[in-house]
Length: 496
Image 1 (tube, one colour):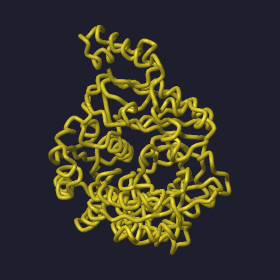
Image 2 (cartoon, one colour):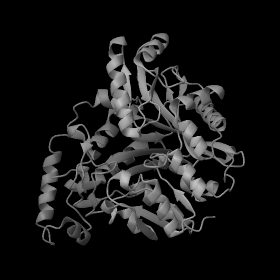
Image 3 (cartoon, one colour):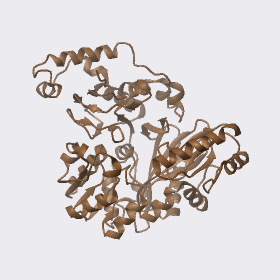
Image 4 (cartoon, one colour):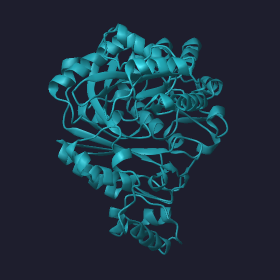
């Protein structure tokens, strides 16, 4: 086992990884930019190494600085978390060359699956169902138009090297292809340094269902059931759950086996996620493989009781899987809400700033993976995710009610967050019935505004703390008092 692990990331995911390392008795090293000098992940690590200015290119995305930090600290392994360098094949290859264990799949696998068209070709060869579309990048508009005519409009343009909704455009007819190609290629180049795009058939209102897999270097591969990830905005997931309301036992088994076939076809090792689109007739199609730990991995951990980070570390150390497929059981229902520093009333634009007060929910079946604290200044330079709120209960209706309760308890003052928006989505008839699809947020919650009176309650609560003992210091006042006025319990999260 490793004597020391460096976490090449920040925020909640770095904190979460460090917690498992601590349970395993493995010291950790944090890396941090100048903007993150006082970040929670730095406080949680055994050691910390500064890696430069706030700009990601000069710090968290700088391979030379990350490798130098590992050398300086004596870390024998690097966990990349998600985002930044997590799916960068060059970084994984550099770790391999330096004799530093990369806690993730081999660089060759990351490279092959990171190219979306190459990944489609691998899946077709492995007999995994794939959405009709191209298996090579397009070189011009004419080529895209020809393929679109063959498979039929609407089609979806996608970045070959990307993910997270960047470089994606829906094209409903021939007249929109030229502009969509220019926009998608430009956005892809800006986000990933690669402007190559391809197209595939656009499915109307599909569900987004993904399968968690684990594979070791000894030929063992298992799946850990599915996650329903259909609730998205701008192709970014905001609510995930497991099990999916749309799957029956037969479909669940078929998708699980398809995910295992996909992993084996790619020569996969470590933790990964095989993503599928599911139509209303129960047909599923390969979308992509995420060659890293997913943001939504806690819902899988909650229903299976398996610590995915622990398994990642064990696999990277050369150990076999801890579980056979027949030993993995799903229990109850789990739901996750992503908490971002974003303003849901203003098209979810980022909302950086200082957190004046923080009160996280707790109680039975509630988990908060957080990278913040009261008084922390949320930087503007990075992805605005603050935390993840996860609940678990014996069945879906109880999990829904538990999430409603937990969201009502979540209080963040000083910045905007989507907690009130998430609360309304979770309480909606659509969600309670499990009738979700990838366009539900855009169609069912366009122009969302908070219920009347909620902002007024926030103002009252803020005013109460401005005159509280401690001279209006919300953080200090919060430490002195364990009981809060009832408005706090119903606000969700609002800035003033």
